[in-house]
Image (cartoon, rainbow, N blue to C red; front, top):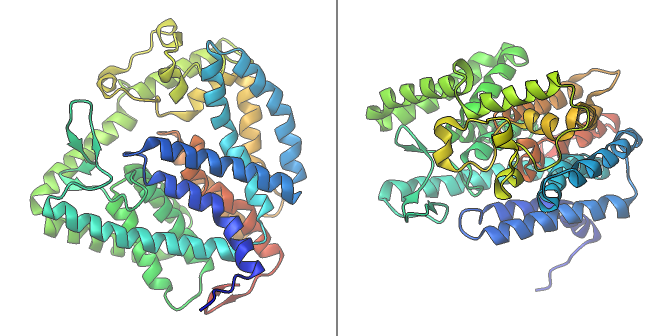
Length: 414
């Protein structure tokens, strides 16, 4: 029996290729990091090639990207280490390339929505297996081993955080949250409620406080008419977890209080320190920055930036974790690129939002931006290809979906 490969199938495969490469690479981030790195590099390079070869570019994006490139090059050359500058300099390009790639594939929203649903369902099934193995006490493929030989996995109050195939619970919660909004708005097929339920399960099971915070804020502002339905579903899921693990309720509550203390109410953390440094740099009217790779990002710790000592940076009780970043993105931008470079960079990222017409599609795009930026306040999601491929890449396809009147049927989006 011969398999017939159509031109359409090849085209769809080529569109989804960076998704396949990068999300396959994420599977190995705790075991074979070199595979993860190579897959990300291949996916990133492919997107650049696709944009150039397709010739589909957004003029507004081009106009704001061109002035930023010399500023980025200057930042790289101004770094304490050219290797550090190049390493973090490439990461600055991630969201820019993703936006350009999203525009190049803007006519294929239906395909992207199908991928979203398939990815959510796949990770749900894998997570069920992960739970079963966890309860059996089996050492699983995504566990990682510390330097002293201790086998570790992410958990809260003794409950394993859901990771599916992507290994990191934070991203697991994030992509299920984005999937919920996309499916709820655009998918009209017969299994809509099932897919929404699966995405809510993934969000709750991730036990990601950042995703919880962003999700509830969006519900209150945008989905306030239906909030009781979603809250009821989440409460049922949480009750099921607590009924299964009744002895964890108090521990879970204590963990929530600890997280609020670290992220919001107290100022004794590496995150708060990074904002102190940023505000000092702004007060000093630092126009062009200290150099790329100097502060906040992974290159600054990998290559031993001396800037931390210069500003008397205090890692507090996180120092023993050997953090790769300060987990705050805005200080990273404005310290390294300065006021001119920082605002120039942010202008590129928000260009898709600078539109006169505000409609339902614009609101969904704004929701995606909010979820990504909310996470960015406590992480480096804006330099993470996985996060970007489940957020910014959908922006232009969503806009184009409305402008070209795609049909929504009981089979989904055509």
